[in-house]
Length: 166
Length: 157
Image (tube, rainbow over all chains, first blue to last red; front, side, top):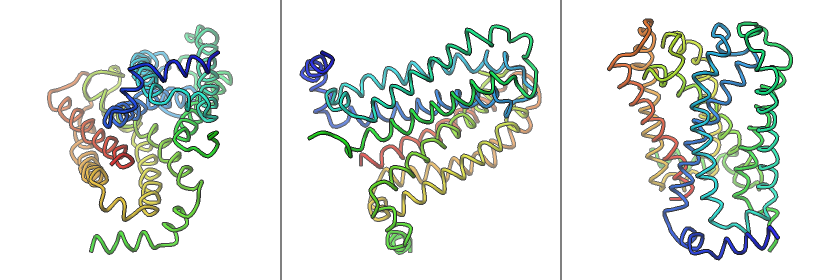
């Protein structure tokens, strides 16, 4: 059923126009890559602070307070540009193994962030300045780094057609 | 002379090794992208502070000091992995306009970052921001964006 949706999506005038345009893909792809600097740059900094590696003298809540809005802005850029890129060849992307790996890791990264924010971060007042940071915070930071790294690697590999069905 | 260097790169064991392999280029490219995330954070956090947009309770000098090792580390990874990628398709890069936009932007960005930006950031020990600091942040973001856009453009040129 999802495949049928992708086939329908690929036949829409918007997808056809995007696919046929010379400049659309490079421009949106460039936005996606610059967005990566903002979104992942901020995420990496947050994760490193969670692991107690950077900005040790700055309270975690302060780092989060300033960095999170930018992370959200970066996330919006990534999701919107990523969805537009998907319009290029929906059926191919849908069947691409790397895209599936990317989405699985993306899902795990989001779950990890959600668990952290609804768990240990609620009691931030108790460990705002604690270095080394609590074990759970370090685990959350490390898992986040690994998952986002995986998202980047798998995302880059989508371009290669090693496992495409022809 | 530049052409001779690029020919030498293309013919080198490094260049031939990467271009002759199916998986090496994507692997080095992935490392290049992972370092991009780190350098993005290390550059932006300082520029945001210089522009008065983030970590306002810390001085720009303190933020820059904290970010410096990450900037140097990720830049090293970028330069090494980037050189490897270039060697694997040196002649293609030589005749690629986007590649040269990237190289000129990179030269400007590195020069600017380690001279003017470093001096302005080190001197910004007071809270708040200044017109000079905002200008420096803007130039820095523009130069590094040029590097990123030029880099992405190599694949499309």
